[in-house]
Image 1: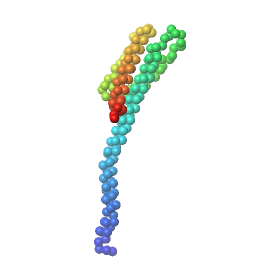
Image 2 (image 1 turned 30 degrees about the horizontal axis):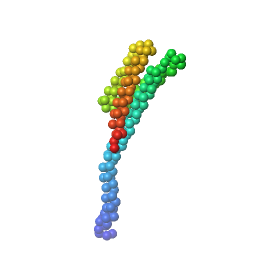
Image 3 (image 1 turned 120 degrees about the vertical axis):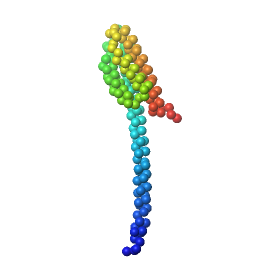
Image 4 (image 1 turned 90 degrees about the vertical axis):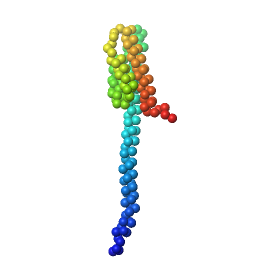
Length: 162
C-alpha cells in the first residue's frame, strides 16, 4: 500500500464532498425562500377566493332582493319563492363573510358589518308598500358593499398592476 494513500482517497472523494456540501448549502438557503413564496401564493389564492365568494354571495342576494322588490302581486302571477332564495343567499353571504373576516382590511370589514346590520333589521311592516322601502335600503346597502369590496379586492390582488 502506498505511503500517502489517505491523500489519494481524499483527492478521489473531495469533488463529491464539495458538490454535496454545496448542494446542502443551497438547499438550506433555498427551502425557506421557497416555503415563504409558497405560503404567499396560497394566501393570495385564498384571499382571491374570499373576495370572489363574498362578492358572488352579495350579487346573488342582491338579485333576489331586487326581484322581490320589483315583484307585483297584483299582476296575478304566482309569487316566486323569494323567502327561501333569500334565506339561502343570506346563509351563503354569512359563510363567505366569516372567511372574509380573515382577509379583509378594516374598510372591507366595516362595509360587511354595515350591510349585515341593515339586513338584520327586523321587518318594519308587513305592508307590501312599506316593505319595498325596506328592500330598497337593503339593495342600496348591498350595492355599496359590492362596490367597496370589489375595489378592495382589485387592490388586494393587484389586478390593475402594470
